[in-house]
Length: 266
Image (cartoon, rainbow, N blue to C red; front, side):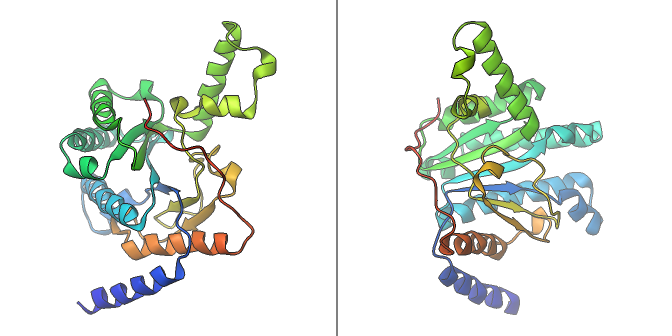
């Protein structure tokens, strides 16, 4: 009870210190397995606890006013884990995507759901659940949730380069047409995702693991590393991260990029 009161007071203090809210926050959700090990739980329970925490965090970012959030849920490197763990993760992802169509929050808050990553690497049942969630929310335009599955930053750029080369080969564009903006238009399956303002990584890991490199590293975004494992990530941890971004913006050295109005993705 006392801790809850203290955290409430501290959160109020943090709110007063925040003058700038990031548009796009990317979160590297790390620590599910270490959380499970710490509490002598099965790995699957750690991943389920992480999924539950994700739903709470989505509520928090919406309340704060963040409109775009990207979640690094499963990287291409994660395929190297034991098949049983990968299957369990895919089961959890499938279950959560299936909830989207019937979850009133996604309708009420106009949450637009989109997956980023290599769809060819996902099993058909999970991909079907993803497609249904995307279809059910495709006209929503208040809040944008990007879930990175089978995602790797380098792989993303390679895939975009292949698409550009295919267009050149087919005569749709010439070599002289190739530019940064053209390559960017082929990233993330053509989604118009705004630059990342803030990266958060949990689990006390001090690296960004090549997450959204074009949108993050090229835009000098703020980075916040914190100790709690993802299932233990708190609202005040989120507020601290946002404060880091706000302080960066208040310094006057950085400005938000002017971006076109975001419209629902087809």
